[in-house]
Length: 127
Image (cartoon, rainbow, N blue to C red):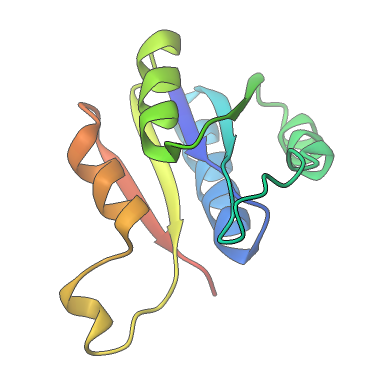
């Protein structure tokens, strides 16, 4: 089994990593870290995330893993393509706490990931 993490370098991404580590150990699964870099609000694309802390965490846990870093303006489409290409069977995403109004609609990326993937998605809140 392959558990994928839609990773971003913040507390939400870290929460997704920690959940995926626990789940991978429980299921004897491999982990695929997917990091997509797209243009920011100013139209410029930041450099790819440094994933050395993530891969070190997976190494310490003894979990086989792979990394896919992609540059694409369609973050969700790129994640879905990687999931399909690599045969992932579960996707873990980090989510932020929402305000009462924000609870009515989830973040656009999270919502599209849940709707556009054909595999189960686990949404993890950051502490």
